[in-house]
Amino acid sequence: MTDLNIMLRCKINKLSETILPLVVADVPVIIYGKTGTGKSSVIKYDLVPALSKKLGLEAILHDYRLSTKDVVDGTGMPVINHQLMRTDWTKPAFIPEDDGKLHVIFWDEAGHANLQLQHLLYGAVNDREMGGYRFPVHNRMILATNTREDQGGDNKFARPLNNRAAHVYAESDPQGHIENMKRWNWDPRLIAFYSLRPDQIHCESDTSPAFPTERSGDMLNRVLKTLPVDAPKLAIENSAHAIMGEGFTRQFVTFLNNLAAGLPKFPDILANPGKAKVPEDPHYQWVIGSKVSKEMNASNCLRLCEYLARLMPDVRSMAAHDAMTRDPDLKRFNPLQSLVLGY
Picture 1 (tube, one colour):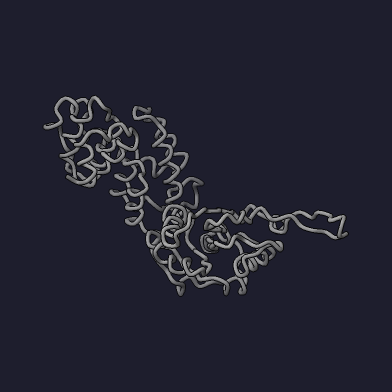
Picture 2: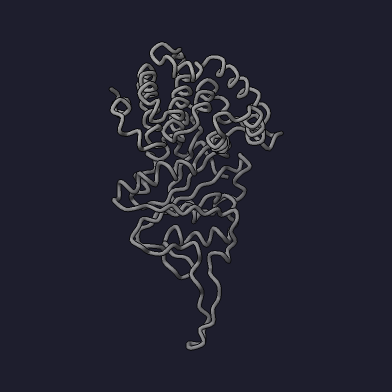
């Protein structure tokens, strides 16, 4: 059994910079980590853009879930060549076209691959070919798996596959994940809640199928950002319960109720932006800054800029940037541009 304690370890928010030199040098990497820690998100949002910038190539991510594949998927279909009287094989769908771009091949859930599938990966990882067909000239190979102890990686990797890659264990990092949430523009209510209760970012359960992880938090984030600002509280509560479980939901709903009581009302901000209440808690400022950003339009922009200028620099910059991204016409207002620049 693999001893995770002697493996190279890093925090999940440091994963991209840890493996970047390896991947740039075209060394395959196997990433280990607990269920839902955000390994896939780091590859998608951090590593692939970093690779593209470092190598000067447009990068395309191909995310393959090995838990849904069989060995026949990687061998192609047999086709009779009547002229030569032989059997040829079609190209496996795993292999993208060679278009001069950088193709990042991400074999996720690799711990579910049986021995036959692992044998198929030997050639893909080491020789960059599969079923007699070669991968594009510009390609990189990355594998990811949960652990057997985590009950998410069922099969031990064969030694030849282990020896074809570098190995890194990515640990959950609540504070680092909160910083990632800000960069990835998550819903500010979740950012504020997690900042106060970082223990709720990753809290696995043996009894409930719904429990908090970085991945399930991303699902709740997508729901929160899709719901309208005036969505019924029950819609938020039900969504959280379905995705994150009962324990998380009780705490999150209580936080939202306290949050609503501690924030200034938007009509008050609009009526008197120079004197309306500014929350002292920086987490609450993130929430009100986001609210102001979503309500900003050409007719109220200057008044709301006056209020945003009273918030913390990073909050007002975030709010101004988001407002202009949502409505490019707002870029003509110089005070809003100044907030983005930190003036």
